[in-house]
Image (cartoon, rainbow, N blue to C red; front, side, top):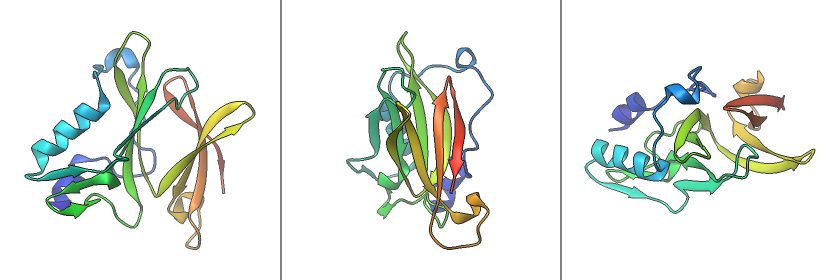
Length: 157
C-alpha cells in the first residue's frame, strides 16, 4: 500500500508549483472532501487525524485557505503511509473569492509554522537538510511567502 500511495502523490521539495494559471485548473469546492474521497477510494480502511486539514490564510488575502497534512492519514492501519526520511506530503490550497479552491503546491516536509515578518505571514517549513545543501544535522528551514498563486522562497537556513 505504501508504494501505491507514493505513486499517487508528488515527491519532492516544492515540485508541484504548476505553471498552470488558476483559470486553467478546475476549482474544487472543498480540499478536505476532495482529499478524503481520494484516500477512501485508494485505501480499504482509512482514518483521518484531527490535523489532516488546517484552515488558515496562507497568502494574506483574508480568505481562509487549506493545508492538507498526509501524516495525519492512516491507510489500512499504517499512519503516515506516504511519509519517509524526507518528511510527509503537505498539499497547499488557495481559496478564491468567487468560491472554490485550487492547489498551488505540494511539499515533502517535516512540518511548518506561520510567522509574521514585516507585517505579512510567511511559511517556515522544516525540511531535510539537503534542501539547504547540507549533508546532515538539524533540519533545514525554508521560509516562503505566497505571492499570487506561487511560493516565493525568502530564505534558507
